[in-house]
Length: 144
Image (cartoon, rainbow, N blue to C red):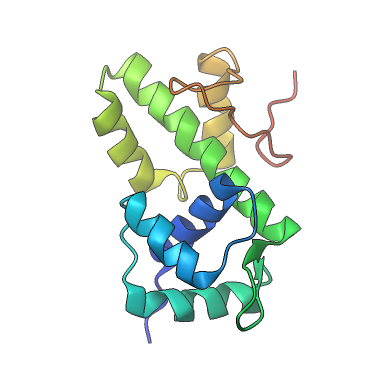
């Protein structure tokens, strides 16, 4: 079976923003409310892979929680994501919608080195355009 990294990242991002444990049934409902496209048939297998990778904790009928490793990985990707959106909007004058779409595509593959350059170009912002805090993660934190 092909591993769907993009779906796993979507789920990690959601759990990172959710900030509290959630049961699978509630997770499926919340993903729908947020228009996050993860097929219901894939959720259980994604959860099992994330448990195997030690990114989440979950026991049958119990809540799902991010591990510290999962929180770090999600924060790392969100840092890339938010800085890319800001860069695309500020320098390429893309709309927020366009910038967000492009950022989803490349946030997990762009190097931390490049993100450091982008952050410096943007004067090391602490918040993004949508007023969310840009996570600081050790491997991508700009050292002045």
